[in-house]
Image (tube, rainbow, N blue to C red; front, side):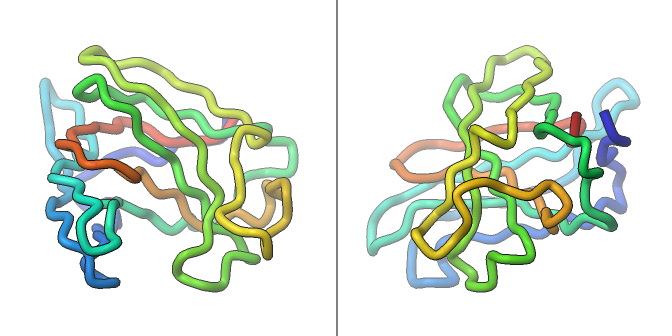
Length: 159
């Protein structure tokens, strides 16, 4: 695995919701600390009203994963709902373009490995498969259905 992104109080995560396009989902992302360990916590209410349906915390990568990387690794926990990883690449030029893969949560910290082959493009204008060296950012996303979101991520990296 390459070095994971550590969740520190100065981690540069950005919160985005469907309100940028007229949706009504609400929430926030913050770094929390428990027993000396920091993690990202994304919480909120996802609503599909008004053509919306997402909240997201995203971080830009300082450098792309190595060519030898075969997937994304996260250490996560949550409220038992399903969530998504969104990857943006050099080819995802429009704000609504991304590659998406689902992951499940449990109340306990769990390591989840998602192979690049599991990521699906958001539209027909994108390549079918991700080139690891083109990945520019990672998003933790609550998406696609009305629900209360509560997902935490302690590490993000590549394997």
